[in-house]
Amino acid sequence: MEDRLQPAFAEVLRRNPGEVEFHQAVREVFESLGPVLRKNPQYAEAAVLERICEPERQIIFRVPWVDDTGRVRINRGFRVEYNSALGPFKGGLRFHPSVYLGIVKFLGFEQIFKNALTGLPIGGGKGGSDFDPRGRSDGEVMRFCQSFMTELYRHIGEYTDVPAGDIGVGAREIGYLFGQYKRITNRYESGVLTGKGLTWGGSLVRKEATGYGSVLFAQSMLGTVGESLDGRRVSISGSGNVAIYAAEKAQQLGGRVVTFSDSSGYVVDEAGVDLSLLKEIKEVERGRVSDYIARRPGARLVKDGSIWDVPTDVALPCATQNELTEADAKQLVANGVRAVAEGANMPSTPEAVALLREAGVLFGPGKAANAGGVATSALEMQQNASRDSWSFGHTEDRLAEIMVSIHDNCLATADEYDVPGDYVVGANVRGFTQVADAMIALGVV
Ligand code: NDP
Image (spheres, rainbow, N blue to C red):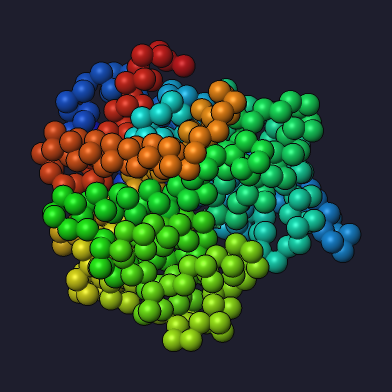
């Protein structure tokens, strides 16, 4: 990081003690920004850097609910409304026991730049709770969501803040949240949440969008060196929303998907993952990866070790933050990996990213590669605003156009800053300048 950025970074550390994931996300962006500040003195004059690191609003609240045995439970809810220079705050809700303010802030900070990269009018925000939906009945999840929304509703709205899903928050949770919002406000305000069901305001392709988009981004990167996914081995981590639809698009483009995982281990299926079986287990039964092994001869489950030890041409980390370490990156490079596109948010550690970039691997950072999800959320908002619903083909075409434009804009920005092919710098600089210019235009607010 250049010296001129050190005071602002020191202030981030001082103001946000112990929030290591947030520090990591800020450092990663700052490391790209030295040349931008030199070229654009107006950003320093308007203290854009200092302002962009401080969320516009942070909300923390108690979420009391009653479990199936009648016991009262307490969780903590968060919504960090980070930056609304480009549009209403927009970003998902994560329900996972690891959630605390530092995780929500890292995700919200990344979201600002990701949303700017889509070119659509959306600001950045993120929220969630330390509630663990795993093993909870539908009734418990519903009561939790209703309690969560009973506080959150006063802070959100289609022109204010528009949450969506993330880890642990899928169509079921969005349904319960939307139902409670509708009841409390007495408004059918479809545009207040995205990721809705198709019969009540949702958009076709939203479910598929993050995974599809990440694969389209990988395909664009491979295209710059005259290659493609066709006939390639593809390794995917996770088996949730992003992972499943990354696998689907990779298979459509001729790739052979050989891995997936959850927190109990990873599966290697050399014949190519049976997606309809995986969807049945994960989307319908809410089962574990071991259920796949039991029904798929030839596939094996590995409980220890790293999924990135499996030789692959294209790696798509789609589970969670910091899941791909320096040792993993070394192994991937030793096995001849061609491209890594991040479906998850910040899944690669800084050391892993540095190693992959130095080794000349095509590396698509999450804020560019996984932006297809939020982009399609913005398309869902457009459909809600016009009381319209688009066909699958039309929506997928829009998603594909957006992913190509994010890819090309990252490359053009990297060229402009004399780091050709560096998608990390391209994404950070392009996202930052879009937001910074809007912040200056809007004055000191
Ligand atoms: P899901 O909850 O649908 O799936 C998450 C998957 O990752 C599950 O298979 C889960 O396994 C696994 N996982 C989570 N934590 C760990 C861990 N510590 N070790 C191993 N596996 C783990 O979430 P999504 O697919 O929606 O999100 C995945 C990633 O993509 C996140 O980083 C999210 O922020 C990012 N993302 C999501 C978007 C979206 O549209 N949904 C948009 C952009 C980014 P288990 O069930 O065992 O916990």
